[in-house]
Length: 169
Image (cartoon, helix red, strand yellow):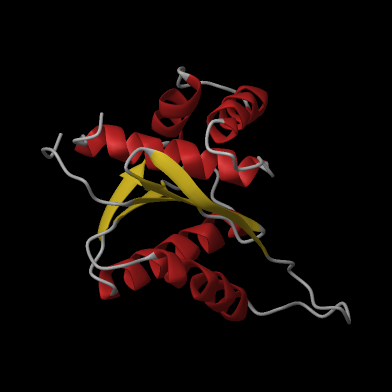
C-alpha cells in the first residue's frame, strides 16, 4: 500500500486484437472502451505490428494526464511456451508503459488474478464471472457493458486502486 490518494486509475487490458480501457476516478468507472484492431486491412494485407501498436497508443493517450496511475494487466509468459503472440503483446505493453511515462503517469503492473479478485471476488474467476461482475458494476454507473476486454480493464483498475488505497473508500 502506497498511502491514500485521490488519483485517477486507468485500467488497461492490453491486446493487439481488443485492448480494454476504463477510467476509474473517485470510485466510479467512466469512459470504457474496447480498442479493436484487425491484423489485416480490407484488402487482406497484414498490417505491420508497429502500425497496429501505434493505432492502439493513439487511442489510449487521450485517457492519460499527468499523475494518473496506469494499471496494466501483466503479461504472464510461461518460459516453456513463448510464442509470437506473447512476444507481440509484450511489445504492446512496453509501448504503453513508454507512453505513460512520457505523460508523467505512474505504472502499476497487475497480475490477472489480482484483477479477477478485485472485480469478481476470486482470483481464479472465469470469463463468465468477470462479465457478470462487470455488468453489475457498470449497471450502478449507468454505463452499458459491452465486452470482455472492458471487464478485465475494470478489474485491473480496481486492483490498482486497492494496491494504492484511496480516500473515497
